[in-house]
Image 1: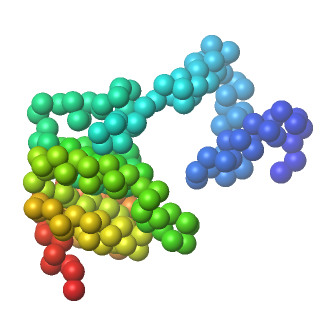
Image 2: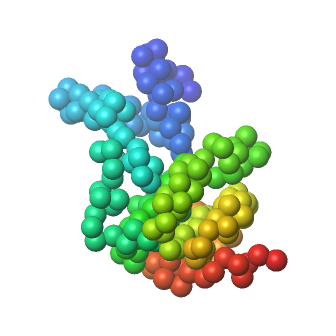
Length: 204
């Protein structure tokens, strides 16, 4: 792709680093911004700067938050005895959109993936165990994607959690193998949460 401006080329390269953004899409986005009034572009830039500088991770569940403790963990309406373990914030949003779950969450921040050099110590697993050691938790739902990495992480967590006197469940597999939770329709995901099953049934 030939550019008439080095500044334009640099901007396209930066947009092209974003997930799912190819060079042509990046160019379209940059050209769109160039056509916008200065005030709108400044608001766009400022929102990203503010996001990066002020965003926090909930000290309880590690979800992205504006405060030290997120709204879900603060809510008196949520069932603190049930923790739904997910990969990242996108999964929290997907499950919340179903309006079928009233417990709290624990965001791992990834999945175990030896191929990518991600091990258990790279995830927020110790934080989950610490929450359970407090003694208030009755059920942990392992709501991870139906992928090899997801299943590996679920099995690892099960081995860590089975020593506690809690119920360990997984979402029902109405989700095809290889499916990411964020792409599952709300009805299917909601039913998978409601019809969750004990994980022991899946362990040979």
